[in-house]
Length: 159
Image (cartoon, rainbow, N blue to C red; front, side, top):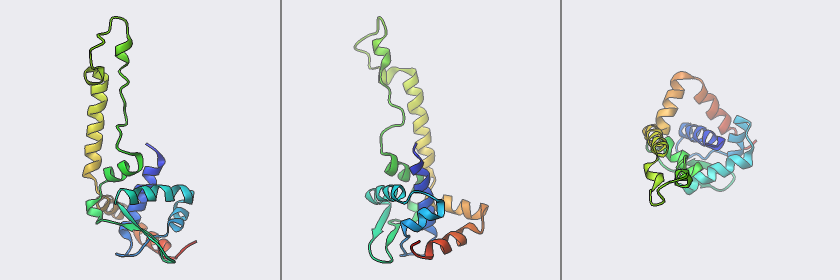
């Protein structure tokens, strides 16, 4: 999984903290985490295409959540950034070993493939149970002052 997922989840949490209707300037967000602004913007655009964020133009423009943070799962963000393809792709290499049954569907019957598909299903289910609101709430409890510091930084306007 690429680092863009981490950036995107943090960005969504930060946007869940901003006052309703306010857009977050992507350059200001990139500055907060010392990230390359163009690459962060690419991740935010992927979230717009997935319907997680909306893009707001104009001098006070930027990005904001398109849905309530309770209805955005971490899996939604992962899929928006990484795409829906499975993390493990069985190549069916058992089909090329000597004496292999050429009619066998090794993608379905290979025990390694089955193990990996089961693990991915568990991983996706766990991420689907976690919402941006839940992550934000956990962060607020663990680091009580971070929300206010982050909101102040983002509200300061473009860097």
